[in-house]
Image 1 (cartoon, each protein chain N blue to C red):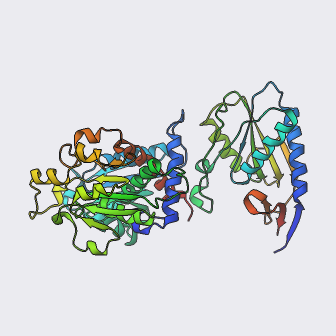
Image 2 (image 1 turned 180 degrees about the horizontal axis):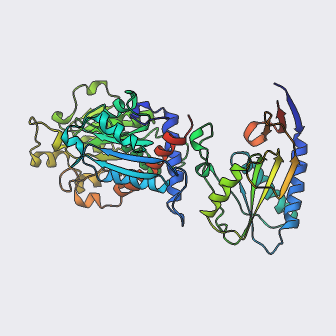
Image 3 (image 1 turned 90 degrees about the vertical axis):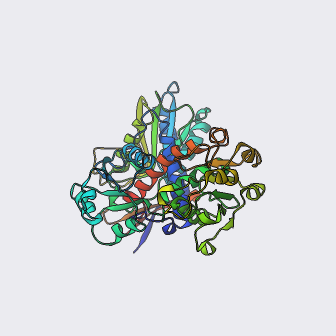
Length: 312
Length: 176
């Protein structure tokens, strides 16, 4: 695997292998020396054209645990605001020695462009491109679901599980990547949200769609993933009158109590407590939100390992 | 391409038994002995050795699997396999006599990686190396303490070890 651009590029076996490797890496975190020499001498650059705290930090932690050198390029105050293009920026970063470029960009397709335009030789990892994809988030979500809900996790996929994704589906790259990957891994997916936040063309996705959260909860999903409303991507048409949205789509304590005993509650962060998820629920024992963060580091270690040294 | 069998299934069994006796003789019973196999076939061999040693000495031998993929210095050159889970016995390896077990000793780079991997897990008082076949051509100053068969080989030849657990049959061949 030279690049990781999209969840669509991953076969079932690729995805299961990444989850297995990530599982080994999370064991490493518990050792007295939680560091591996695997990427010694390799430079990873975080190239972020869009705000991010957790994804950037997570990649940084992952790279450092593998002994890579890390550089970060944040758009604020950089030459990009002076009009430097993606191409120039990427070539500049590569000239400084980048072997792996982790890119987040507001345009859908930016990572793909970087990987296939011939501008740079470095391995490219997509850390979110516009409303398109965020494959490492989908992988860490799958890792968390597997860890919690599949008894013999190693080597297994997620077949037989039902996952509900609730909220702003239209503007969420997390939802898009998750739908693809969960399907690849054999899970069944239902997306839930107000009609304005369900993307047009959803008929072509391998999912069930609903605008009624309560009836989906009655179907007893194994995992429920709450998404935030991406205010920054919504241009005018729908600003959810919060009262209505909270009434119909928030995961309240009452709704959470109706979930199956084993069901887990997920959120990719950042959370708006009291909007899409009640504070009590976010802190409850069925919440795996911090497990997602923890698995994020291990999973990104696995991705870095794969693009650099994994089976070609 | 021609293949020549140098060890049959029963040769392998006899060879391992000899190595098991050697280990029992070399490691005083007062020492804590741990066997760690290097995947894939080293792990199978270490499990067999552990059983053989137990049947000789009467005490169970803690054994595990030590994956060295993440410690290799040739990752980016490609062509290696996916990592396997490392399994360390519950007692750990601190203050033990730790015997690394692999199928073929060649350049020594795998063993070098294994020594690095060990330091991240604990501190044995002594580390030893047992291999089924030593084919020579070392690139590092590393030698084995227990060798099943010395097999001088040409660089272009390939040594294939086949074991029931991983390959369905059992033999060591030189392929040239």
